[in-house]
Image 1 (spheres, rainbow, N blue to C red):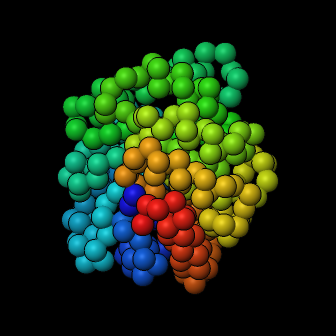
Image 2: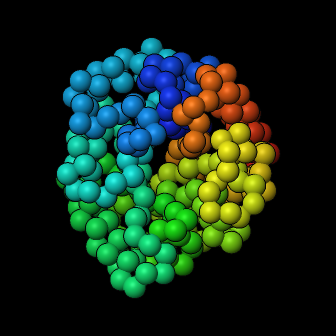
Image 3: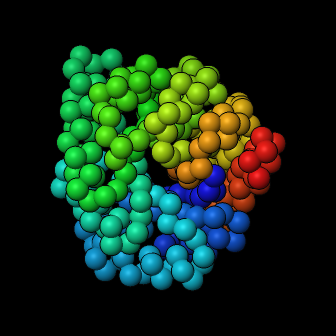
Length: 265
């Protein structure tokens, strides 16, 4: 498994700051944030001018470009994301499912939207992943399985985030085992309690919450998963660089310990 961190943790700072401190924290790679409102990192309307800088930073800081997070399912926005991914050399784009939990027809609409985006991903040669998300149409294991059944393309995968599954009142260790056959990306963070939001950024740091992340990583390892394990901490845009670094480094240590505990490193 490749340990990475989403640059959104350093969303209050420029892209080089994110690369610099994610590298100093010991990560293998980086997931670029293309999340409007949370960062000004991979701004897709300006991706042509940003792409050379991203490639320079990746080489300079020796960080593998593991993925991009672009939550929108808008076809025009997603095509920009895929064009940027091809130019920069990013293999995976992670998006959210959208829709609303329990709303009639919402899951079916999400599946239809994702199906069309996956056809686009096939043309561009990238992998599109989606994760269960609190409050959205895909929010737990049963809804994730329905998406897996409906979309069989090898250009589609599941992005698993244990904090969302935990807040859907499920056991993330059991949940990851149920969908592991199609998992191509993992967002990882901890969570204290089962409230709607993930909590303060420092409480999302791995090891601070209630989730059995050792068991979660063990299931990944035992099933031969070798893809990205990307830390995703949101809400830290107003934090100091020092605060962001503490969260990054603390989580990296916990991730390494999880891998060692299950014999993956």
